Amino acid sequence: MHPEHYEAYHRLEITHWWSRARRRIFAAAIGRFAPAHRPLRVVDVGCGTGANLAEWEHFGCAIGVDASPLALDYSSSRGGRRLVGAALPALPFRDGSIDVVLALDVLEHVADDAGAARELWRICTPGGLLIATVPAYQWLWSKHDERNQHQRRYTRQQLEACVLGPEAERLRSSYFNTLLAPPVFAARLLGRLRPTSAAPAEDFHDTATWLNKLLENVFASEWAWLRQFSFPYGVSVLCIARKKA
Image 1 (cartoon, rainbow, N blue to C red):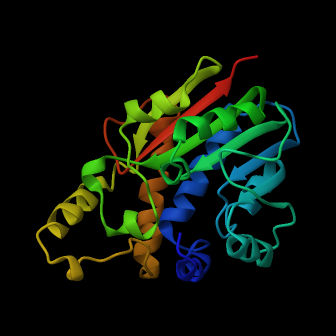
Image 2 (cartoon, helix red, strand yellow; image 1 turned 180 degrees about the vertical axis):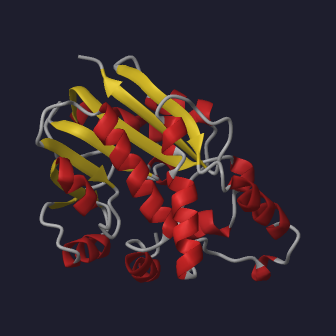
């Protein structure tokens, strides 16, 4: 991400419906699928401005990892105490030392995403949990992807091929951000018809309070389905897997 965009993310990550709903979904996934013992050692790879770390601390020791010193500064300003400057595909943790590894919208930034996935599994303890998300569908590519320095977008099958090696037991593989996907799809397709200069470069904006809460609850409600099933389409892709003991 370009340095000038961190301030906007830092300002919006706590309150924005997209971030809040995702935190609720991922926290529920950790509660359902992570090892039963507490405290857990949780590593958030690509923690950005650190809004999620306080949520992960409910499960134990939360460690934020990011390659950007500016991101780590913002994370520290939120009270993040365990922060590490590092980037995939080389993480400074021992083999099998992390109970929950989070790579939330990270793999699309890495040229060698398969190598990055192997590194995530290397640090995961046997029986531990990996949660990875990426943006869906190359045909949804927009200036938002360019601004955030994405290398690619994924289908569910492509994310599975990247993440699910021989050491992985798949627990859930699905598209998500599905209920709100139709207007996003329409906006992206309509954006192709507008001049490039008129298309918005960023999807992260202030939202009216009532609408922000409504969108958060609609998005977060997808967990009730994801507990048992998968969605056939969505704006993002989710893979939850356990490292075989």
